[in-house]
Length: 421
Image 1 (cartoon, rainbow, N blue to C red):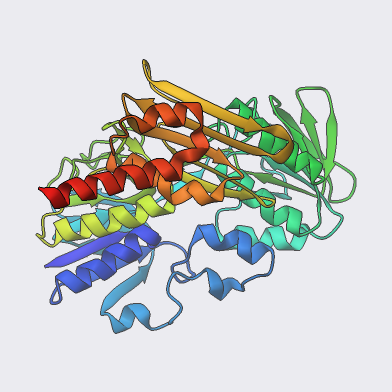
Image 2 (image 1 turned 30 degrees about the vertical axis):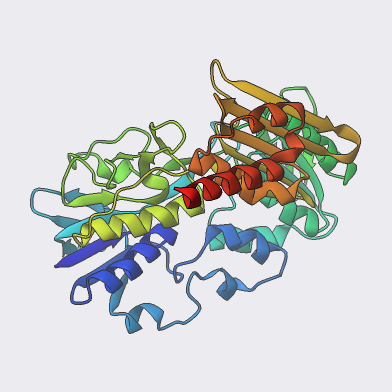
């Protein structure tokens, strides 16, 4: 059996290692288009603040890790898939045959249609090469404009602030991390950042970017203001890398469409990670969840099924935990609530504390927390287990900070009843 994996990120790496464990005699080939060893994009901020060197971003620290596991790592780009003949055409003009194929090509940064985006000094923060370019420009006291205050943008914000730059953040939405936190929490994060010396503009767009004096840039905002920048970083979202699948016969939407075994409409082709439109635990719908825990989960499950070890994907819980200049925020599941559901919010603006709980009947289906780290595991556990809270739902509607009490009371009651039976 010959397994080929397109993509050398977390999904691809975990899939290759899982395949080696469950299919010891198989041929395993992993194709990655970047010249560096497989690395984690989530580690790039630590590289930016000099906590780690480039080697610290690598997913596996031993240079011989993949060869020791008899996993063939090819540095090339897959141009097309010939599903009928089970072969891949590479950028080098070589071809690669497979029996089972995993598409784990990840995603790429969205480049906003703004005049001047091709000027020198404008970068994403997505690759190690991007990181190298940012380190050169983001020196103490330099003027940096960050476009986007979503999850990825806020991770980059943390690193830039640590480099002591003069940082301005531009966000089109009416709050920070709008796809993760509601109006109250998102604006509390904004206030926190501004108190820490970061300039944040929400409900604001960059209209154009032009050359300034010397190597500087002029960033024109729709408010009429012009910012002078030594460096502009674009963090305005990502899209799945599915463009090369045109003509392959694979069904795609926002990503590769799969079933609950992460199998595409072609039974010999699977998908995992950012490129996979997999099942959402909370809604049952199939969506792209571009977060590393989902990629890891996908990689393992897809590999099991490729090797003939049936493994059903129950769905990934939408989960984000973010540290923004020391303020921890988190959201889980259906954090925005559901039609007909009940909810409760408690906010302490002065202490930057906030909790929001969303219920369907007596089951917690979504939550947000700000400045409350002790509840992180419990909130996820309650949502993922769909634990019926009974009378404790009413207690939580009166005081949502009693979430730990509710969890312990209900799990102990269930355990006690199970013991009696």
